[in-house]
Amino acid sequence: MSETDKLLKRLDSLLNKIEPLIPDIPDGINTFNGGAFRWQRYGHTGLFHKISHPTKIKLSDLQCINRQKEKIDCNTRQFLGNLPANNVLLWGPKGTGKSSLIKALLSEYQNQGLNLIEVERKDLGDLRLIIEQLSSKQGHFILYCDDLSFEADDPSYKAIKVVLDGSLSNTPDNILIYATSNRRHLVPEMMSDNVASKNIHGELHLNESIEEKLSLSERFGVWLSFHPFNQVQYLEIVDYWLNKLGFVGQDMDMVRKASLKWALEHGSRSGRSAAQFAKDWTGRQQLKNRNT
Image (cartoon, rainbow, N blue to C red; front, side, top):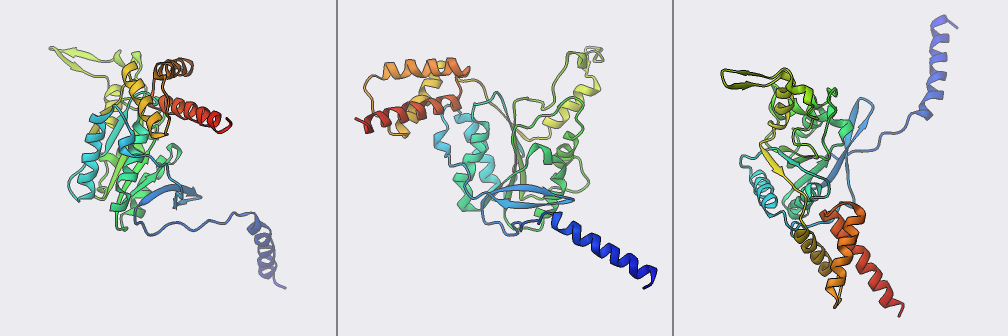
């Protein structure tokens, strides 16, 4: 046996040992007819996987954010109608309805062919690859990036910056990015950023680091701001969810006092907190009635 044959035999034996250790890559989705999907990275590539049971929430379920609903709903209808539309940034405190609003669009427009594709924070570097794979597909695609934020020294934000507006290649008209963030400018703003800013003849010249941070969020054509709910709004959301869940009660003053205590204990008068209270209160009352 020649030395070449011996080497080939050894390589073949080595491959037989390695192959069982290599995980199989599942089949991805190639046809999109509306629905929820998730991008999953595998080695040097990635695949789209269908989400079998997406969150079921309707636009009508979202209370006290009518301005934001109307704006993003109009932008989405323009998009689905093959009219000019913008990428959207939804920013504000947690629990104010940012993510729920995007998910509700899927419930509203899935039957019209809307495809909502979740891209996790760690996979933002794949945005160009994702867009290249979708560019040959039929349909309308919204890339959903939740809780988008970057540390001051995190260079990965440049990946989304280039995709939004900064590459020689255009993003196809049937692809938009809808992102949520707790920060208006996505990157933390420091007092030190202002040190190098200058006032020249009454005109403010910002430090380059500030301009860099502003330039990312400004690439979103639509900014939607969300704000904490006041007590009246919080109680209105509580009432909505109690009615939706079928709660029947007479002493509503006691229920509202309990809901305010719930918010205090949870540290938030948010829409999420209101819905959680309604589920807890209604569930306990229905369980009590069932056992009597």
